Length: 359
Image (cartoon, rainbow, N blue to C red):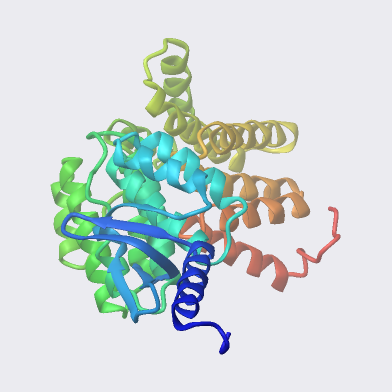
């Protein structure tokens, strides 16, 4: 190149620059106040998107401030972003879920954060809270991730709100000592409780005390009381009558089946022989109906754990262990998962949960 005339040398350098630029990935990031075009996203972590403009220094933008972005060469992700921008939140979530099956590295992190944005905007509070808590737990620096708390709540009485309350209450128990994390979780929990008209529980949480009841909606608390007072037979008759008459809404069904299982399990404790076995098997079916058909509803985690308890009572140790492990895998942030881990540990100490054991 030294022998080329200066003009030819300049043209060659310019052509090389154009070719190099064409090989580089050109992404874009939009916020309400700024637009970054022709950038290269290099990392996504702790609630921040890091990117470089040309050969310049790294810049960062908060995930929560991004209104839309695109990644060159990833049309599926870009389609998800267009859906999110068009407020087609549920469709966007479906795309993000599909993409997460094969994504890794910073793109997987980006998808998780953008999925949280879509869930929150859709009002799918329970799903959004589960994702938010998971992102916080995985972050090295939680400060920015804590700011991504779901803002849009579900409708009053919705299963999404009930599930969010259960997840937040369980997390509040698990993070004692982490003041900043606790403050964020408590604030959202109080907001949800007030939305649900549970002012007493909101006051208890604000004062640092436990809620009076985490699982039972108001209409099922009388049944819960019957079972606790030794009137499980009356509770079961009431539940069966209401189920046959179609008096429960779809959102109520997981609770109805859960408490039917509770009633039968209580009755089994006072029965013997074949009657005991029959009641336990029926209780197990009630619990598994909730876990299988209403997996995203609040009673699902506790129902699956109770199914494990039933297996223990029937002597099916291996099946009990599998049920407990399923609880911790599917609902890692729940109170039921904490109890399931304790049950597995107790079984191990008793020498009942060795791998391959098939009692």
